[in-house]
Image: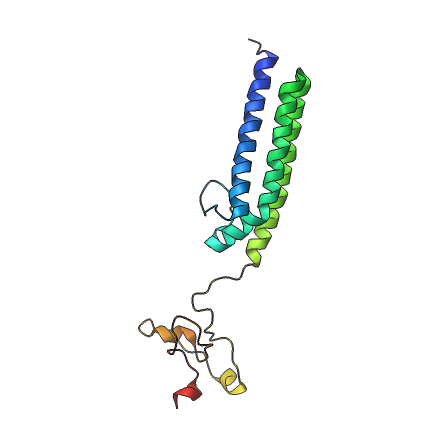
Length: 174
């Protein structure tokens, strides 16, 4: 059984327009910051799924390219339906390949942007690694005691973490 060319053109155009609509929605949600971390849509990698912030950054970076890919696909869909014949299928395929290439490139930029976001360590202001003086640098790091929430902070504190007043350097305790 031979499938008529018109049926193939309509199927190709529907696929192209559905993908264009998907990337239009994802790009719009990403650029406005309303795309939440999920399993299916957006730029997803270990770097971007690390937190809501990294996911938002990656998708905000990738959003203009996703919107451009949606535009490419709309143009390809219009040409697919407008030209007719087997060349229309070529327009659909070239449009799909071009859009996927653009989305791949901008997704890579989004992953790089997400990787540049500092990791949330929980008690970011408290640091057992940073020493403000040579005396503190010579002291061994404190062991973490689960019963004492301040033990994860070490011996120095900027005083801005959620453990305000609990983390303090040893000289202030005297």
